[in-house]
Length: 515
Image 1 (cartoon, one colour):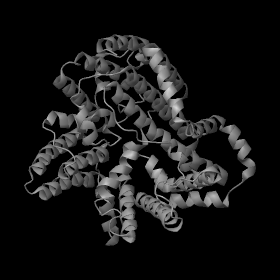
Image 2: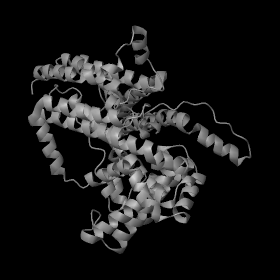
Image 3: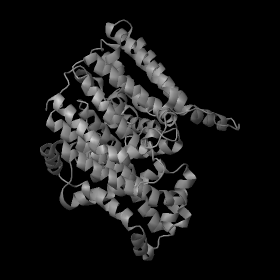
Image 4: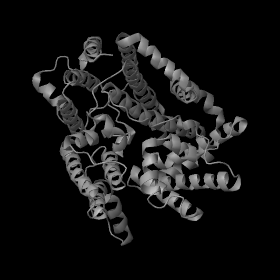
């Protein structure tokens, strides 16, 4: 598809969307419009918001106008990415600038081969130091204070959105340069573009310079297939987040977790199922939209989820869930510790350390540490059973009734582990567990199903779509490809209409923004 044709079609798309989002700015005077553009913690610039859709369409027009000016195009998106970060974290976007500049020049020093380990340690000190201060200061300070019998009052430290994601992105770049898997980028602008690329900035996927770097200066070319894929993933992501996740959260899951003692064990169990589906639809919805937006800009980023609720073991789950993080932990923590090359016991220890680090990455709380340890233990148990006892190949998967049983057991173990993820402390976990096992009353479940029928219909729909073959997705994409921009505009308009029918008055942030 020629760029100038795309540009004209985007103008048509903009006109088709105007009536859906004009209410966002309708009747606003100049000062109110300025206030919309400035940082407001209550109104972040979310992919699922009408403001973002409006701004993104304008961004696309400007982006395609610069299609033949590589530096201008890269600078344009980089500046917007910094603005996008400013809208979520105010002037803490300067942290992103500091990390970008320091790692760019440190990577060059590492590549020159003079004291590379020292320079690598320096970049880890900067990146992990900033992450530790903003994310873990209160946690560790409170832990030390408790050990010495003091009374700790948490300090007022703002946690910039996305700091865990872009920190891991920059660390992987310097480590890959150190391991000679990639050459350092010659242009600071290119590196700033890679680190700040707004679709992946706040909640991933965690892209690697080895994959993304070669795409930065390629001529802008968006094929009809890329355009169709982009629209398809944006629609799917919007539906997952703004329809399924937000609806079941506000109308059922939050009520259960906020006041578990008011509900029976059966309702608590359904609440666990609901949260499992909520967090999947919320996070994978963001990843889908990020992938779709990147495709419309001419860049390909890897898939981050692969039907994780169909996993037949916890090992399989981590091959399907948040793939960019699990592979990052594997490559830069597990393998750095020696992986499986130093004996079986050391392999299990390395696995436990890696998964504990994964839990701590998600949050500064003992709940997340226990969640990581639990997942690490489950992965180790599965490896021991499958590879040592049963002598299965590492990529073995059961079939038939065995697969059904394995998926059933894995799903329920996963749902239980989300307790530590969702509850604020261990007392809340205990209350949920106590309600689940001591207040179970199946006779009221029919009334619960009728009272929350739309919630459960969405939950069932989300589970069933996990089993849809990939060929169906490919057919949908080809259908969008044949339908062109007009069909894409109609489809997005329908999704926006559905969102307007089910959304609450408050903007619902993505769950993984807190990490």
